[in-house]
Image (cartoon, rainbow, N blue to C red; front, side, top):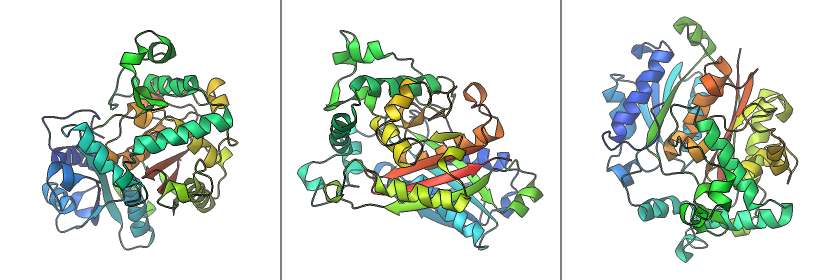
Length: 383
């Protein structure tokens, strides 16, 4: 990974190259062994005026004549690129694939970023009426609070936990300790933590981030040849739900995640209770609760109780987002799904430093496009 944050002195290609070189070196991968390069990015053309980024990266890295593909699946581009690479290797078409995800977003006006991200919504049922991802998250949050007794203080506690984890992550965008009192109960909280879309406030949302993450996927035989410290992809899954949230049977059930997770668990021949930690797509903090429930780790409507009891803390029984999550590690949209896999890889290798989860053997991550319209789930297994 690159450091996530603001990179005024680097282009998108600079970030992609930096992460890719680190991944190639980590894997001991000779460049001649790379059969294909998959680049995950959602907004390269729109925000950085560069298209055909996969070809450009392949050339920059000296990997010609490897095949090159750009994978775009909204904010789930990263996990989609990994699943596509997994399929290429598993099918025997490729032995070794470099997957790099990245985005450069901080230089663009906030309104422009919000608009581009909102184009993932339904064009006539939602977008033309001014629907944004924060507004969908706000309605989702309000209904969740009413149905399950989740409070604003619970949301604040998720943010506090993930900020605390990010302080131990040198790659994280935000290194800032926060408290429930400071962002929710203090006299200054109305100013420092303003309403974004009621009941969502600033500290309930992830930041806009620049950054890139990269990984090498290969066959087990090739991993031995490279003497790579390999982690196994045990299972993958992807599923969809109606594009318009209003067309879903229950708007606070993440059906695409439920199906994607079920497919990944079936492929891995594992159950949720076999997983030791998870990296979840907490673009809005309510999603950490909903995702952990719909993936099968907690009963519906109880994840906030697990948080209260310390279950999801770094030293708890089931740590969630030890990296800091999207909330504090950051969310350079094309990079996020790859960054989740990179974090789990470090954790399963025992290389996560201060944020290392004890006895981490199996990890789960999920990556969303739109408001859970298209969701991918990936399970990694250590030695």
